[in-house]
Amino acid sequence: MPRLIPLPRGESGTHQDRTCARMPRSNDAIEGKARASAIGAGVVLLAGMLIAPGLHAQKATAKISEDLRPIYATTQDVAQGKRLADSQCARCHGPAGVSSAEGVPNLAAQRPVYLFREMRAYQGGVREVQLMHGEVQFMSPEALIQVSAYYANLDPAPPGSVAAAARPDPVQAGKAASAACAGCHGEAGVSATPGMPSLVGLDPQYLVVSMKAYKTGDRQNDIMKTMVAPFAEADLTNLATYFAVQKPLRAATPASGDKAAGQQAANAGCGGCHGAQGTSGNPSVPSLAGQDAAYLVTALQDYKSGKRADSTMKGLAASLSDAQQADLAAFYASQNPQPPNVRKPLTSAEWAERCDRCHGTNGNSTDPRVPALASQRVEYLKKVMHAYRNGTRRNPEMEAMSATLSETDIDNLANHYARQQARGIVFVTVPAR
Image 1 (cartoon, rainbow, N blue to C red):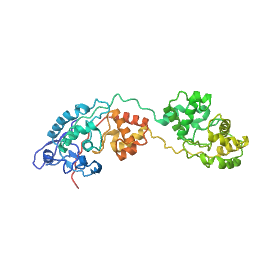
Image 2 (tube, one colour):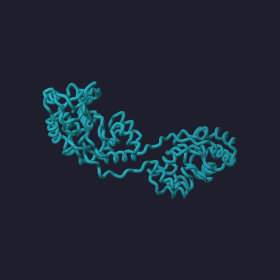
Image 3 (cartoon, rainbow, N blue to C red):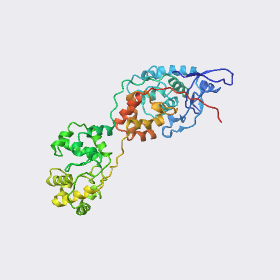
Image 4 (cartoon, helix red, strand yellow):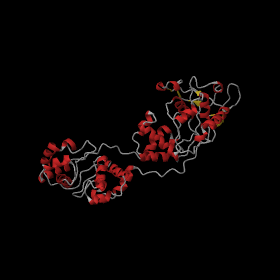
């Protein structure tokens, strides 16, 4: 609802109606009417942070002032902000700040400090969108204040009703897909069948490459080729992620070779790539610790015969006798597998919880410097997260948060916030103690 509220009596002894919000101020930001309207106190309308004066001429030395000072905008300021917004902004952002253009954000009920700062960033070229630069480059600080106050005063956009269905989280999707694998590779990827490899303790990159090789026929196994044929690349990634985050256990299968002899052979020829104890430090090289012994013997035989093509492994396996192959397999099977260096992906709820720390519960920011996300256009939210992730939009905190977002994370977060109920917010001042 519009936030037009009566203020307590000012020094003049009269009541005045003012819109309540917060906005930036600096020495050059308040002129004429806006400065005069700061007389008489009660509830803050505009206070906040400002890109330093002269930014438009000094992009390379742009500074942000943390000086938070209250200023006030009257209902007349808001009316003037509407006139400016209707002439400059409504073509793209909608007549009441609710956009109908794909990729263009809603501005209704957005936090006014944030709006002011972003327009100053466009003026100074810190944000390089030519259309926006052209619209705001000649607007005075007072005009920016009025436009920001106008948009902050509007009713927020309704929650999105056409947001796409959320994608399942990678681990949960991988778990569902793994049901087709459990019969051979064991529950949670720990083999209990001799000759069948365990899938835990392996880097996801290696697993994905291996499954693709079965799919293309580079690895020859008709059963595996049939099993992976229906899976898209995203499905293979989800499967590999699921197995990578499971607790790694040794395969529950027997090994017949001599472990001590196998260790000597491993130290002589295998440890450089697969690790001293069979735990690889290279995502493209499989860990062997805890692997089923019969599977390891079969793999060595296939490299030796050329059935599995790898020139390095073919050369190493060629010199091994059957007994030496069994010894190597027994040694590695006896080692305790270690989890790969892979962070368990956050669920959508966990990501949203992190975002809410700055952007407010369900995306309703209570910090005047931080934008609200609730009820924002879904495709705009996706575009922004991609921009932070690839560095075309700069903000240290957002770049760090976005760096590890997957496409699924971005889709799910955008859909989550687009569906939230947006709420306007009033900022008030209290007497100093």
